Image (cartoon, rainbow, N blue to C red):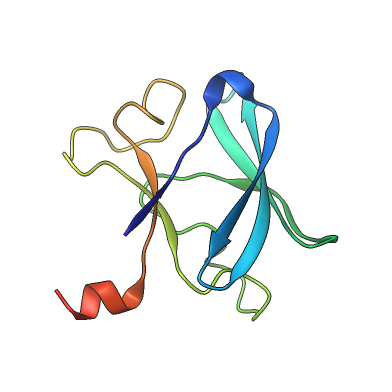
Length: 108
């Protein structure tokens, strides 16, 4: 399991992140009125998603069944089970974006 950092003080910003053998560009944004984060996803110059909401416990991009998207789930989660949302106070304090390698889960 890998951790994908979100630098809240730099938002809006973009960062490249490699998942399995593919590089993606993630652009993080914050909606202060609704207290939620969104992420845009690009693969090379191709925009795949704009404004995917980061929702606690829900894998990012899980509604897209397309080989262009990351094959490993990216899940906002609190390992200590203290909170159940991913707002400004929670993200990067209790809730972190975890990139899950399915083989790691199978091997214990």
